[in-house]
Length: 511
Picture 1: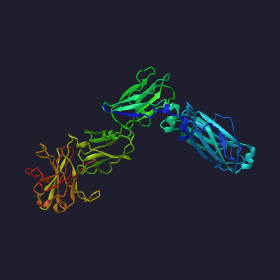
Picture 2: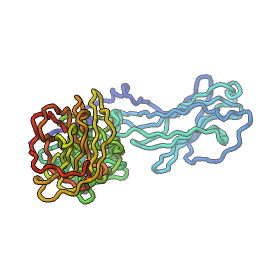
Picture 3: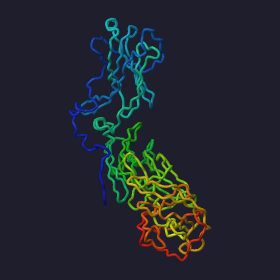
C-alpha cells in the first residue's frame, strides 16, 4: 500500500514551544494595549463607545477636507505564558491639527456580526493652542479581534465634520498564517493530520485529541467560491475510541480539500488541499457528442486560463491553434460541429503552462483521408479525398518556414462529386482537385486540405512531393474513416477505380 503522510499544518510540536519565540514574530507582540500620541502632544483616551454615531456638522471653511492624512491597519499579538496569544487590531492615524479639532475617533465594525468597537483620543486644550498646523499621529492598540475576521474601520475627527473621514476594509490573518497558527489557541487546538492512500483512493484523517472538549467534524469538499460538500461530514464524538476517519475520493483534483472544525458555534475551520499542485485530472474531462458533433470540456475546479482547439501536423509536433477557437476556461466550453480527425486536439493554457489532449486518437473515431497522384491532364497532380460519406473540402498550397505559420496561397475550390456508394475500401473517393505540378512539387511545399462542412477541422498535409519519379498513386497516412458531410471536387470526372490504393515510394509524407 502506497501511503503518503502529510499535515494540515504544524500540528504535532506546538505544546513544546515556549513563548520566548514571540519577540521574533512577523506579527508583532505587545505587552499592554493602549493609546499613544506623537511627541509634543498631550492626549488622553475616552471611554469606549460601541454605538457608531452618524451625526455630523459642517466643517469650517478654513478646514481642508484632507485634514485626515493617513490610516494604516495591522495585526498585533498579546501573549501570556501557558495561555497562548490573543489578536489585536492596531490602528495608526495622522492628521493636521486644526483649531476646531479636539481629537480623533476610530471605529472597527465586524462585517459578519455588525458589532462595533470605538476608541477616541482627545488633545488637551493647551496642546491644541500650541500645536495648530502640526501633524498629530495616534496609535490605537486595543481593538480585540478574532482569527479570520473581516472588519470595516472608520477614522473620523472629534467633533465629527461631514465629509472628513477615512475608511478601510481589513481581513485578520487566519490559521494558515504561520504565526497565528502556531500561537493562537483556537488554531492549534483545531489542527488535524492526514495521510493519502492513493492505491485505495482514500484519505485518512487523524482528528486531534481534545479531552473534555467538543465533538469534531471532518469532510471533503470542492473549493470554489465556497467549499462545496463531497459527501456528508463525518462527526467524531469525544468518546470515540479511534480518532482516525477514512474519507474516500474519486479524483485527485487540485480543489479537493479537507475541512475540520469543532462542533461549536463559529468554530474556525481548518483546511488542507492534498492535491493542490496536481492539475492533470482537470484536462481529462473532454467529451464528444456524436449527435451534434460537439466537443466539450467542463472544469471540475476553478481554472484561470484559456482553452483552444489546435492541430498537430505530425506525431510529437507542436499543436497549432485554430483560428477563432480560444475560449476562457472559467466554465463549460463547447465546440459545435467538430471534425473527428486524430490531429484535432484541445489545448489548455494557464499561468503554470499548457496541456494538450487529443480525444480522437483513440480507437473508434473514424476520419477522412487525403492522397495525391498524377492527374489525367499532363502537368497536374490530383488530390483526392476519401470518406465513407459525403463531405466538402478545400485545398491550399503552403510553403514551409522555420517559424509558424507557413506561407499559404489562396484556397483552391471545386464542385462536388456524387456521394460514394458501396463499401468504403472499394469506392471511397468523394472529392478531388487538380493542382499544377510545378507549384505542388517545389521543395518545402505542402498540400494542405481540410473539411469545410464543419465549424472546426484539422488540416491534413502532404509535404515535399518527389514528383519527378512519382508513380500513379501516392497517399497520406491511413486513418480510420468516418464523419458525415457533403462532397466537392474539380474536373467533374470519377476516379479510375483500377488505380492502386497503396502509396508509392516517392512520397516522404506527413499529414
